Length: 447
Image (cartoon, rainbow, N blue to C red; front, side, top):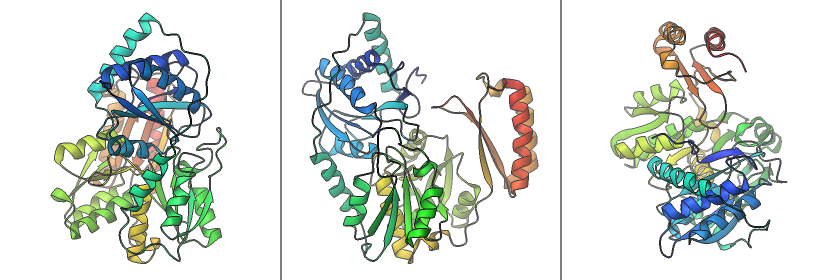
């Protein structure tokens, strides 16, 4: 279903500019309250650590309350904490003000329903229709104000829920390094792993409103890898700004993306009879090694489009529970309703503990070389109708055969065309990238 402002993960933009200007944010609150609210409706609202978060929260709650929704402000919380608490505390909706892994100048708003799941496309389209009507009538935001005092019970309730899900021996004697991207996990992740018994070291845990995701976190795990080696730690975890992603680093500094954890969790779940249907969902970006390894273990693998909402849809349509993306955004639907970086880190730690160390999770695995290039093109176009692009894609895919792939897609959150090539060798990847980039820039122009 076509939506004008909602992307794959809520509404995003530059804070202060449409659609994240004060009037539109207030109007969005009114529209969301009208569509989702009812008598006695309540909303749980939280932010990440961006400097724009507090004023956007004030404007959003102003709109929600104008529609009769009572708002509860939780302050800085990870996105998955809001998803869980919206369900656990029986709120009508949850709202998170965050642009996830984007730079601090950006921000966003995403909603969760009372079940703890993100809203359906149809519901977001309905909110957009009401939003258009509200904007046409005109909205005058109130005076600048600080948000109310945060309800501190929310963070503790979320931590207690996570701790209750730990299985097996604790992490006593394990040194763990956490990179929280100066984001929403900066306070809670160290508390969680300390309470699990680990000796915790941290990087990226000093948010100042502008350093979120800057050279750190899951987008830049090389800093964590160096910190893990320097600290002599057993493993490390890198989160993104709103803590719905998590990547693992072994003691030697090797990065393990989401594919590794999907693989090991699938094998463990099969043994424990917790993998309905014997299948896993990845995306078009999941590495070929994962698909081949699952097939060797007689497990089926499906690919969804990039974006957790598409992985979720594929799982729900087939009655599955396990899926995710190499970015570290993983879904364990029998445990959580959305990607939860802290829970994902716990799962990785439980596997590492079971096998005697994180290095064992990488043993015998050799990913195919894979390169993703972001192309800034002069215009967007339907590439399925472009004969030159389609001919170039067919030629490369035929040359790669079953040992390589090409994925081409426009970003849902950024003005770029993403080109991914995967093959047996880096030389094959580089050659295909160069030829396809030349064709794409020739057809679409170079921005």
